[in-house]
Image (cartoon, rainbow, N blue to C red):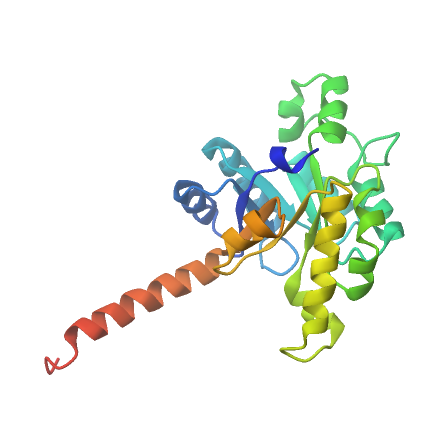
Amino acid sequence: MTGDSFPRLGAWVKLPAPESVELLALAGFDFVVIDAEHAAIDVRTMSTMIGLARGCGVAPFVRVAGTAPRDVQVPLDAGAAGLFVPQVDDVTRARDAVRATRFPPLGGRGASTSGRAGRWGLEALGDYLRTGNDEVRLVVQTESVAALAAIAGIGRVAGVDAVFIGPTDLAVSSRLPDGDGTLAGLVAAAERTCADHHITVGTTASGNASELLDRRGYDFLVLGADTAMLRQGGQDAVRAARASTAGTGR
């Protein structure tokens, strides 16, 4: 898979409300990442969100908590377009993610056409297996200095479609102080490595999407979370209202 075929702009879904997915689709996002690692989203709600996203024409990804069968099997059978797997620090961990996500011969994922991914039993087994191995996207998150150093090997593991540089966990795990240029240099080196090896790469963006896409070579971005967008929109509305009534005595 190339960067050109990866949906470009996405958002985290943190709120356990399917309507959040619908609103993000209406806002024009290309994909959503339902957060099963950090958010309080249960399996039933996740499945509903995946179905709603597909109906709204937005690609539903799930950020899983790990690579145990229960972590990956349920969202994949529910029809997820792909998975984000956190804390992939080396090639071994990347291969573990592939084994959990892909059908044989690449991996050991269990097969069942009875869910949404198998069109509720209508999909031929061969088509279901092909889709799971060729069309479901596996994104591995590189969130440590060690992961950045190994990013070329991680991105070239068969069955890995893209790497995602996670700036928050990277900043925490590196223990480097704010303003230290070392981490920025390591990230820049990882970006160049991905470009040199034609590895599809993404990250989060905060007002710098144009720089990341046009000048730094990123293929896809997560622009924020539904929670932050709700909070920011509310703050902006309150500030504007208070500013407009300033000095009126009200």
